[in-house]
Image 1 (cartoon, rainbow, N blue to C red):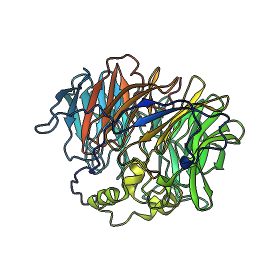
Image 2 (image 1 turned 90 degrees about the vertical axis):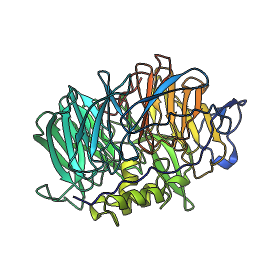
Image 3 (image 1 turned 120 degrees about the horizontal axis):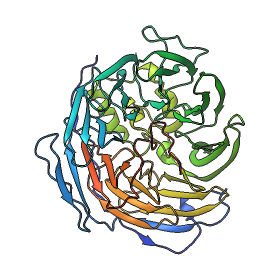
Image 4 (image 1 turned 60 degrees about the vertical axis):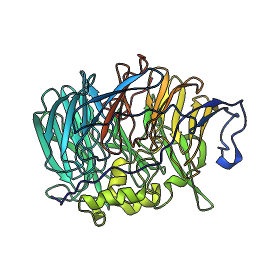
Amino acid sequence: MRLKKSLAGAVAAVLALGVMWGCAQEPPASRNASPEAASPPMSVELDLDKAVAVDLPKLEGTLKPASFRTSDGREGWAVQIPGNLPLATPAYADGMLFIGGGYGSHEFYAFDAQTGALVWQIATGDDGPTAAVVEDGCVAFNTESCTVIVAEAKTGKILWQEWLGDPLMSQPAIWKGRLYMAYPAGQRAGPAPENGRSHRLLCADLRTGKHLWDCAITGDVITAPVVAGGKCVFTCFDGTSFCVDATEGKVEWEKRNSGTSAPVVAGERVILTTKEMRDGRSFEGIQQADMAGGGNVRNVAAREEAKYIDRDKGGGVAMDAEAAKKLDGSVGFASAPEAAKLGQANDHVGVQTVAGAWAYQGSKVLYARGQMMNAQGRTLNCLRESGGYAWRAECRGAGVTDETQVFSPPALGREHLYLCSGMGHLASVRQKDGAIGFLYATKAPMLSQPALAEGNLYVGTSDGRLVCLKTGSSDADGWTAWGGNAQHNKTE
């Protein structure tokens, strides 16, 4: 158990958010637009200096919701969680929200999703609860240090927990009564590393914790394993992607494809972002590969320079490098443990702290109705499955540079994308053409992807506030955890 100190959330610049349409044009040369693009995209410009400002409520005390109203008529509420720590994506199920108290916290909470009222809370023996997943009446999450926990979603009663290793920087997945979780090998009674491979992927019974199988992998998993079509697919922080039979644990293929995000599986394709070095510069693009073909690459598109994943840059929107170092210090990490393998993560995606890896999400791709979409650097990309752009949006405004990763990965509504930013923005963008639904500037930096349920957007801030925006539209629904569901693979 490491000595803990509370830490105030990261301070961020105050920006506003707005939009204006531009005519179709070639992407600006300064953005190093992808040479793979088949046609010039319809271009949308997001002017972050033309904002609808939203004042979140001043919260008196903790765990007590307070309401707010936007100037254009939407309502919402916010709750301050003790500790003022960066929060991960909340999970939704059966009218409740589930969220940990943040990196460094020893608490996990359930709230009423409509009112923000506290339903239950539990103390964790170790710190740093990740984003949760909920299925079959169970809520599962892990702590950064160093335990996986499964509880009854309705009551918070702990069904089982197990110390797996230090640190745990990704979150679990659930599929057909099984839990999938990465952990460092060789600690306590766990299996020793195999062939120099530092980590294992565990499959355990969801309700009992009984180990069903595990297999050796090359490092901790970026954000979470993804389960689809009976396969568990994931990318490690060293850039290696794996496909494992989700029932038996057999590694079907692995590929050193320089992956920089968790994948999405769309039919027989694995789609993720990958890195390429050109003349000493980092470039990131969207790669399609064949699931059944051993991960063989079909194509790479939307490849642009990505300074935010350069060494020592912190990995993008998750949190800046200095804030992450302070958070690590607050939980007793003068330097990261060897088990974290952060030298590899720093070389590959610029993450050099446990807090940074805990929060890192990359430029994860969404798939819906023949389109691939992601937030990548200061652009939003929408590519047709058949080739070429449908549209492309570029963010401009104070504080936005070529080194900025503006948005965390979007959440997928029926017709819109829903986004939040490290500078405090909330936005909805129509998937069909990039038209804007709403654009707000809250002055509250947000690190992780939002969740969507019953017309509401739910997001955590970097200073420990859980925020609900009532969009007034049934479009904001069905994205109930990071990645959309307990398998982290929601598609349309």
